[in-house]
Image 1 (cartoon, rainbow, N blue to C red):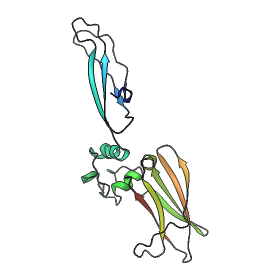
Image 2 (image 1 turned 45 degrees about the horizontal axis):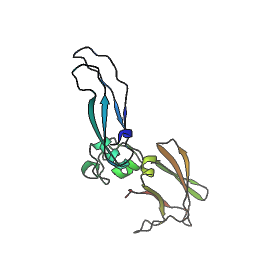
Image 3 (image 1 turned 180 degrees about the vertical axis):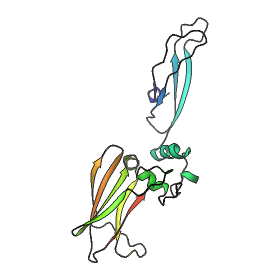
Image 4 (image 1 turned 90 degrees about the vertical axis):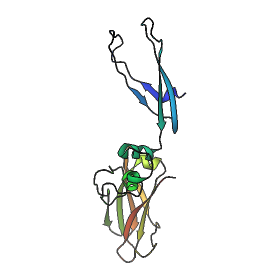
Length: 193
């Protein structure tokens, strides 16, 4: 039994007339992944009734990405509309990027990133999800001078977290402009295993 994963809210009424009902809330906060179970015992002073009333409750602890998929697509599976590579809202951002950047995958959005030149450096600023980061999602700022083949590099990239509100982080990556005076920059996101 996993009783500490379930929290019982306050009963709206504790004394009921015959045939009346009351409601209460059970909050599920799983302490680990997988199926979790507990039993609620509600005592009664009604003669001849079951005492206590036993109510079995179950829940499933999900990985952060599964929870995100369940919230937005009603499925935990990395398939169909909820697949990492699928672009449900047709905004050019696949679900993996929407998840990693804390965006709503059912509403068109733009990439929460921008780049500016500051002297001999480029500054690439982006927003990332703390939940995705904590789940093991890897964020890598890469650059290329040619866009030829697999000519992407991380040499000289330094990142600083500028802000963190517990839900999202604003991150600034600084990299040299290079000898050509121009540079292509992108954010590579790798899903957690």
